[in-house]
Amino acid sequence: MGLSFFIQCACLVSLLVSLTLVHAQRRVFDVTNYGARGDGRTDNSKAFINAWNGACQNIGGGMVLFPRGTFVVAPVVLKGRCKGPMEFEIQGTLQASKEVKDFIDIDHWITIQYVDGLNISGGGTLDGLGADGWGYNDCLKNPGRCKQLPATLRLDFVTKGYISNITSINSKNTHINLFACKDVLIRNVKISAPDESPNTDGIHIGTSQNIYIVDSQISTGDDCVSVLPGSQYINVTGVQCGPGHGISIGSLGRGDGDSVNDMYVSNCRFESTQNGVRIKTWAVDSKPGTVSRVAFENIEMDNVENPIIIDQEYCPGGGCNTQSSSEVQISDVKFNGIRGTSATKEAIILKCSRSKPCQNIELKDIDLTFRGPGGPAVSLCNNVEGRAYGLQKPTSKLDTPRVAAYNEIEYDNLEGRAYGLQNPSWNLNTVQVSPDGEIEDPI
Image (cartoon, rainbow, N blue to C red; front, side, top):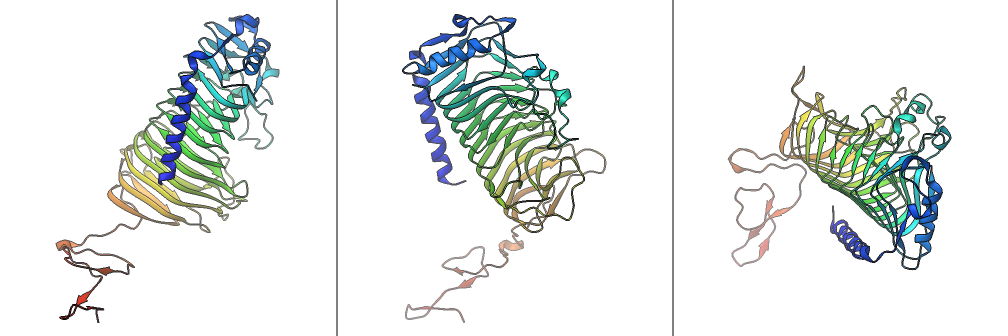
């Protein structure tokens, strides 16, 4: 992944430590002092906005507090350029409005914009009342013409953010959406929606850098984590995903120059998900783009469909032209230490582009089994250049470095020299030394 990625992570941690150290010094702006009522009926959006504005304009920043209770909130946009770091403490439950006008053709429930230093915590719950809106979602039937539904929490242009110890349930759309954010840590959050709920991604990341998702539980009807174009230095560690559609990069290829680079996913567990770790790009009307320097390591799969998948013929609605080829170049992707059970016979699918074959793909220590009819598990690899190392179960279609009997090393297309003792012996050219000590080239 490169040293720069880990330097970025270290910088992020130091920023967040500095943010949390001032927690005790923050002035509290309790929404109930602005007229909010936690009775499960009163619309508290005006009180929320007023408390936020008071904290934002306070020199040194402030804390907006929702105490225990159920606070109904209509859609709000909370804007920054604040006079100090901000905190949003949720001790009770924030509940979305039941009014149809408050969620049809609206992209947000709670939006926070242009804040430098934001801490969201408190142990409370964001309840999106998703069942009120899911029936209006017909995007698969009417792509481009369907009605927009709100994400629960949108952060736009936020830097030095920390989201921890909150629960988000039943979002009408994405639960947490990050756009143009930098240096954000999401830790110990719980996200849940039924597996049949449409487009309820857990954490959606776009055009953002240095995003760290740690020790969280995500159960949704769509991707647990989805990473969209313009994102770089993304780290997902210790996430339990399922049900849902897995952890995905993409889709990419709709915009010219779409890219996702430097993403690291490790120590995660997937249970009964539609996919495991996935990269998806469009083939139809595809624009040039890149996915590079990505690693998926130490991953556990339990009854997962498509545990490992690169899909460069992504077409969720069906009916796409199969002769089209993705122009997104995927390279330098590592799948290492991925183990468990597959719910599909094809446990590994590397379906890369004909015009832009995947490059430098690595499979190492893969142990995936399939116990269903027609087993055992198999791998499917099209238009892929790469290598497989260590345990390969199912057998990989990638090239495997070969070690021959009697400790002789075999190699392909290798030019070089061997010096000194060689045990096992190499078939490379061996430098010879003449009696007078001069080095001679082999004849």
